[in-house]
Image (cartoon, rainbow, N blue to C red):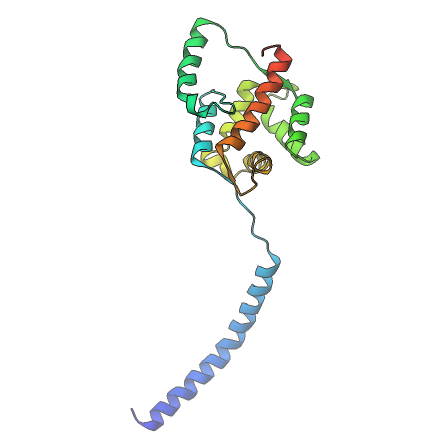
Length: 188
């Protein structure tokens, strides 16, 4: 390539970079300013074992702490028990549920959101079925909803707070509800 053409190419490159680089630099600085101001939202998720517990909840099975290994047997027993005898309906009033949420570190806004989300028929009480339906929302396509993220935040906060809800954290929340319902219904 001749020195003249090489020189012209260099000048053209400088002009191109100067004209496009200024706006690119401004855009880049705007992006970096926006990036530094915007805080990424942490999306919580379930561990594979907690995902399984949410799956049990979607089937109407409440698994409490220490029972994950026995969950398959519990599912079979639940099916037999529902045929043999009526199941005990665990019910927690919304006030009792708010107390439970307080123990898990919920603020007033979270308590209002979760109480309304779990008490789907808005009758002032949360049945075991309503509770299980709410837990089931923490998996699949609904896991990213505000409701599900708030539920998982409370579960995770009461455990190791690492952004992933472990089976023990999930079961601790389930157990707290089951114990509140058992006290109310007189079942040990």
